[in-house]
Image (cartoon, rainbow, N blue to C red; front, side):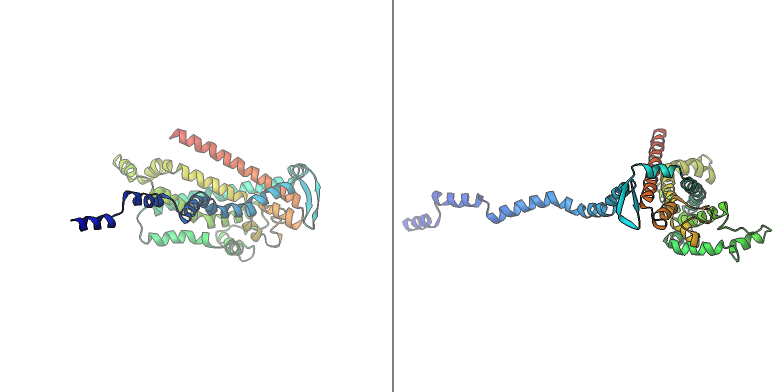
Length: 334
């Protein structure tokens, strides 16, 4: 018994031996302390590092050009001598507001926007309503709707320029077959604006149709079933169920299409050929985008072109404000 007790006493640590080991385990090592500080720094800084590339690119390609354009709009700055600038204040803006060419471009932008936006969205809504029903090869039809949108502006404009050609164009051939005299689409005021609008309609109708289709598929089917039980036809269901449920989406497409019409540039430039930047010989289809390009890169007046850009920004802000007011009104009505 004495040997066993003596072995147990020597093998098991005493109370005095256990205390230093326990206190040593509670002390954090330098490596674990450094890792904890690194972890805390990673938690705080990683989100900012992840979003930093966006702000860097936005600052370089968005904010800086915007501020530089605002500075240039207050100076006389010529493309041929970028190092020499003269302070003008608001003179560039007052000259634009007194220019008949600016108001002509603004009017053309408005008319082309109306001619292209209203039929485009109306046809897109009808196409989306048809695609909302079960059709054979529905995926194929939806892909076909996006084909014009995927087509480049240059290709579409070239094709429509040939279609609306004065001599040998298919459009003049078609209207001539029903006894209508051929139209010089490029030189006519309304004809040229209609031709440019047709390019916009062809490119963007399918895109808006898919937006409407996605919104229609989010409408609860119970509403259609209830309307059907009440004896409503498909047209009545479309008017009294689909349209009210699509009001926010329709408002969105109207605003986006209006902004696109305000910035319209590629289609009229390529349709006009050698006189594309002028919008035709008489500026009959010159938009604000073409007027900006003509002032800045053809005439070399970068200060005046910058003023046009800022006036376009003000116009877009007004459109956004109207959109906000209408959206609030729709929310109150609902």
